[in-house]
Amino acid sequence: MKALIFAAGYGQRMRPLTEHTPKPLLNVGGKRLIEWHLERLAAAGITDVVINIAHLASQFAPALGDGARYGLHIHYSDEGERPLETGGGMLRALPLLGPDPFIAINGDIWCDLDLGSLPSEPAGEAHLVLVDNPPHHPLGDFQLRPDGHIDDREADTPALTFAGIGVYAGRQLLDARIRQQGAAKPATPRFALAPVLREAMHRGAVFGQHFTGHWADIGTPQRLAELDAHLRR
Image (cartoon, rainbow, N blue to C red; front, side, top):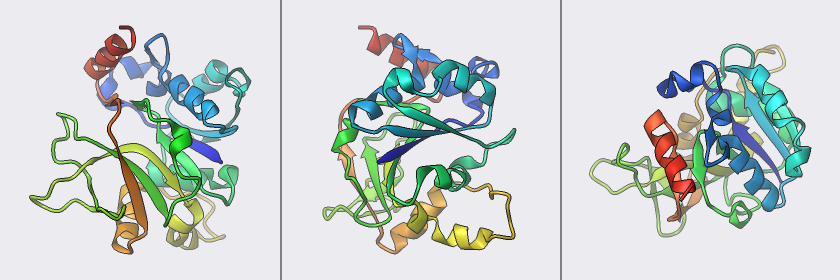
């Protein structure tokens, strides 16, 4: 398998830390946040990783190189000055990811999930990792059914939070966007992945799992400091 790490965002909630450093390159627990992902991907047997970049993109290659120090081959999908969001970023990276299913991870989360335990391909178009709702997101995102299907959250119904980790049949999931783009439209469209996933949920094509280990959404400097303290204990 290959993997995609979303690292193109501005990290606006992390300012002023992200004014001069991309969020995935911030240090936590003695190493860059993205390095935790790279090491876990290598431990899971992944050899090729695509990192999509935009905000302060020039800092990534000097910091991470070609991936050799992690036992990986790193490829960079440069989106230019303005990020393409998660959906557009995934679509832009497909030529580097190839036709087979791949793992995708948000660059601004930390999780001790064994990535090697993920399925090599989803039962449908996507397999998502869900976690218990953190205090800053009490309502959650999606519902996990007993049969493994994932549905959109319904009012007054318990839901779980999307961990920012999944296995995707990328070309199948993004088929409609690929056809809309067409050969006559070379510019990659800018769109979020969440609405695409919800459309797939309505088709019964999204499955997943509930992970109960340690997970953190590094959305603010305070959460970064809390994770740093946890990792240094």
